[in-house]
Image 1 (cartoon, rainbow, N blue to C red):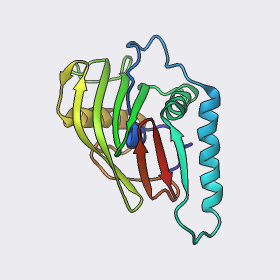
Image 2: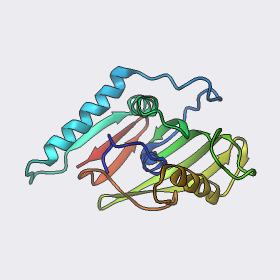
Image 3: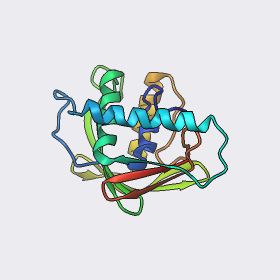
Length: 197
């Protein structure tokens, strides 16, 4: 799966490889501000990885560095330009040792959803990003719906609803996901992430 493909909640949750949160203002009325220049820097990095992966390489792993601000701009740019219908905001904070915090604003207004599901919600979580052999998953440490702690199955339910509405296969937040085009590992330091390919 490529970074440039249509946004799917599970993909960005895996990008939850660094997902997540110097939490911004609530409400879907205002969309997340972003720097087009920073978003384009990430797009150029993606193009560079794709190009370099087309050529044989026997040296040590190569790395691309992406700052927290650049990654947040890239995500906001994708949500804006692709007119994402359900996930209206995704912000992350990146810490050392592959630790992240995330905010996701979900807007299900106008969708066919069970009555017990809130039509708008902010989900916050803290997680460790675990990578091995080109695969990634999140190890959730804390999970909140607004101010209330919740169990991971609530996120899985939101993912299932999102998948059903978009005609995709439902997954779980704790599933392993394949990293895109040859990326083998992700490492983080405070405010930045390194993609090794």
